[in-house]
Length: 143
Image (cartoon, rainbow, N blue to C red; front, side, top):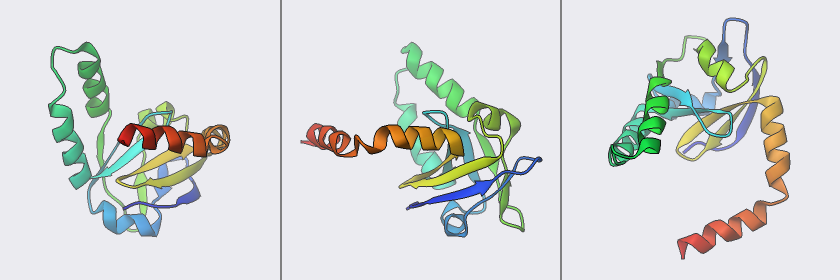
């Protein structure tokens, strides 16, 4: 399970230090792809396979399902961590997430998200005050 948040910088070659606590659960190979809300999603291979199985059940005849799978899978890249604990974030992924220099790396249970620090702060500031209202709506749907 991925928890917490870490502030890091990405270098000019697109290398980002992966927090030490995340390295073992990620494994030797993992996937980085487009996320939602202008961030990147990072999955261990095991979680990626679980997600892929769920997405297989989406109807082929549904235009949105086809489009979502095309983007998610075509933008996914298999990654490894180098001997210094860094991963290379492909340029097209950095551009999508508007990542320039400062990033926030956050744990979200089954995945990691990589955000531009500025975008994360704006997003968090916007939703933080609504946290309890959001929780109420989410928990209402479970019942």
